Every structure is written in structure tokens, then in C-alpha cells.
Length: 181
Image (cartoon, rainbow, N blue to C red; front, side, top):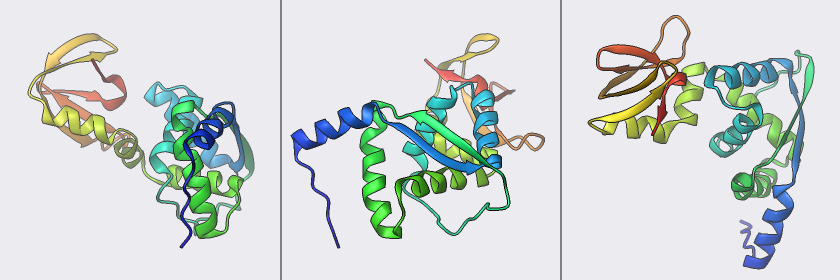
């Protein structure tokens, strides 16, 4: 087993380099469209969502999926500084483990993301926020309709949209409408 140990100064230089690093990979059209739709639904910038996917979906790469039948689309985004350590670790460990190059690793991460149903993508992206919402008695939430204060009773799957919805004081809201203060 090979271990990667990076000296502190080398790590800082690597993070500076990665801070300005543009990620590029050809992904199936379907994957690109899922990311674009999720970005709009979740009200997160496309680049912000791509970085969040790299951070949250990168350590469970399944290399057995193939969407070769679909037309390819170029996925490009700037890697955020706070995601750089995750990204470098992924490239180092997953590349050796599966004998993949950087583009293949990125493609697999996004394919794994896109193949999940919407509620599973949301659970993985917002696991900490969901736990926080469910474990607090009373909190203020920002909604598209304004501020509300109340107890989150449960988080469920909306049967119509397959997205998560949250019940606050007997009213239903899409998880995309809520932001913790």
C-alpha cells in the first residue's frame, strides 16, 4: 500500500496551484443536464454545485457505470480553494486504486451523482444540514416567502417530484426553499 504524505509547504503550493485550477472532463449529455437542472432547482450556481459534488461524492467512485450511448458534453468549472484538498486526495488515491486519469475520475464522480434519484443527491449534498434541522427544537429558516420560525417535524420524499420536502409546523416546503440562519 502506498501512502501519500505531503510536506506542509508543498501542500500550500499545491493548494495555490489547485486554487486556480480549471476542471475539464467530457461527460454524457444526461449528466450535464442533471447538474444544470439541480443547480437551478437548488438555487446554487453551476460551478458551486460542481465543487459541492466533488467534495461530497468523491470517495465512493463506482467505475462500472458506462453511459457511452449518450452524446458527450464538456463539463468545465473552476475548483474552489476550500475543495482543493479533497480534489487532490481523490486524484492521488482513486487514480492509483482504479488506474484512472484525472478526467476519468471526474467523469465517474459526476456519473455517480447523476444516476442517483434527486432525493438521494440532496441527502448526500446536505447531510449535515438535514441532521441539524431535525435535531433542533426551534430555528429560523429563510424561505422564498420570507422568514419563518418553527420546528422541523420531518423531511420526506415528495412523490410527485422525487425531491426532498420538509414539514415545518404542519406546512410543506421544498428543501430548495430553505436556508438556515
